[in-house]
Length: 550
Figure 1 (cartoon, rainbow, N blue to C red):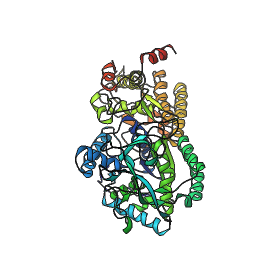
Figure 2 (figure 1 turned 90 degrees about the vertical axis):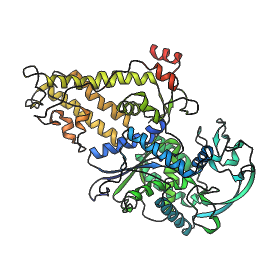
Figure 3 (figure 1 turned 180 degrees about the horizontal axis):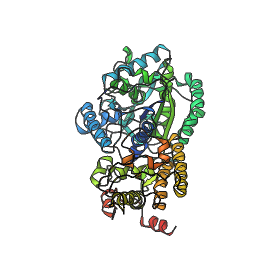
């Protein structure tokens, strides 16, 4: 995953070139399943689909390593921020490798390329008179002798109806509202828990109102291919009107501000984090501009959770537009709502929910995890992880439907001559004239067409349902399909997807191919109580009883 072996991919004239990114997770913790499905797994599924279609796709990922999240973690663990980054970057990389994420490059933002590119973009904004100085009140901890930027402070969210008591200084994770630290009720220093005082500090602000008309035109021209929630969030921000945003911070861990007056400050992490997609690509190939400054030939498709939308749909495009250079801007924004753990949140400290480093230890195969998470992808609203639901989907959909169909066909082919085909794929000479087979091929063809449409529109749950319909129809017509082998593993031997053959599955594997010994693809999960005991119950007895009665 993400190794720089071989010749780097570059855009190919005349081909569909797709640049795919998944939101860079903060490096200071282990991702949970909700983080995985919204960003990495969704991006991976789309990247695999693009490659199968023959598109020239580059999938870029990595870790976001600057800012208060890393600095506070380093203070807590009594080590340097770089040590935190190195340790957790390795954890993220290992986790995504286990989940079979097919990144072309997986990098990090604490790199020389990132500093160089971020500072170059910053200087362009200065040159174009899009940054201004502004002195504002900020929280200051006398005990720690530091300004409490962003995640160095927490308190009660001031947003009416929220009142979350652990809102960060820059954003409330519960309601998603962007905050100024001085807006918090009952603020407290995250390092020593003392009550801060207010002091003035001067920072540089990005004058977003000067770019508002350009952003409005950009959003109107491209948002038709965005997910509904991304479109809604972005247009809500535009309706409210954009305000200048501070892009520097009183911190030590970050990209140094290349300005004499602000040399003791760093760039705000949400200013430089999206630039990480560019700098990580620059670490992959010196010809990175062929991807990132080539809007005529490259489509940019980005995956994230709903809480990251406005940073990618407005703030990042505003940064790139402000340079007056020919950047590849976002074309398709694919955002999801939240995957909850039962009726609540994933919480490492409370011991509730499956975090990605725990999934491997459950002995549930990665294919099952990927399937279940895709089936629960929160495309139209929040969804919930539930152990009984996972068990049901594995036992019924994967084992009894898909696995049973493939195993029955393979076992039939493996029978001795006369009863079967001695493990050799036969010619399907009558497939194009056999009435039942023709009807089946038509139904499968319709499923393939709908699957392709769903995938192009990034509606993965619908696409998954269509793919499973093929196995369902195969089980229904098993007597006709005895020559066929629709094993996903076999189909995926080559990343050169052939749509016509997908509609005539007997042509996928050539006659004469010898199959191995048939073995079950899946094994049923007998119970989940031990998993619930370990990770927390996902559904109350009352809720399960109500579900069973429906």
